[in-house]
Length: 256
Ligand code: URA
Image (tube, rainbow, N blue to C red):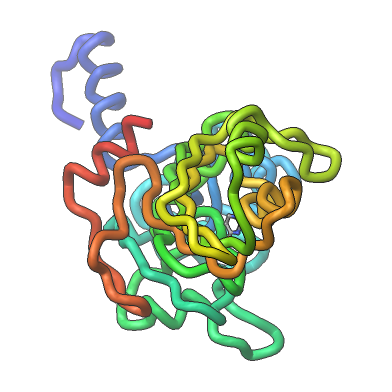
């Protein structure tokens, strides 16, 4: 430490030193990509986290340079590079990082990216389209947190006729079994004799929500593709491929 510092300067010096080299433990765990900051707080409170071999339950604990942090015995590799990608999920992939039945997972679609990326939310096995993946645990948490969910837009091909009465129900909110959905934005893009192509935007993320909403009004979903998450669009991204998000797309997601 430089000599001849007054108390205020010394305090400032230590603050700067800490600001440069220390990070709050929950933030450190989240930015290693294993979970959100809130989940990290739970892990800390439950005694699952060690710094340099000692269990730490103190919420405000700081991690300094060279400290070794482990969660449930696993040492965290602190990867500060944040990666954000848009993936076009094909049919037959599960939205998970691994599968005990050895089915294809979305992790396979980004296997050539060295950072460990996690899906933001999920798409059903039989749903295709836009899935965001990142190692930014905090952003993933914010985007999927109930009450803070961003609008997601789907193109659904459904059986039968989507009449004005059915559209009105979907726009008002339907009971999908113990839960009444919020008003959806819906429009019929094409009505065929025995099926219809419909664009639907919702902001909630209940399990199989779009399929259950159409079932509630009497149409069966035959295929479902997610084409947008907020302003992030699937565009011409080919199925099974990914692209890195642009700086402005990342800033947009962080602003939500
Ligand atoms: N709604 C569904 O029914 N399935 C999805 O995968 C996403 C939204």
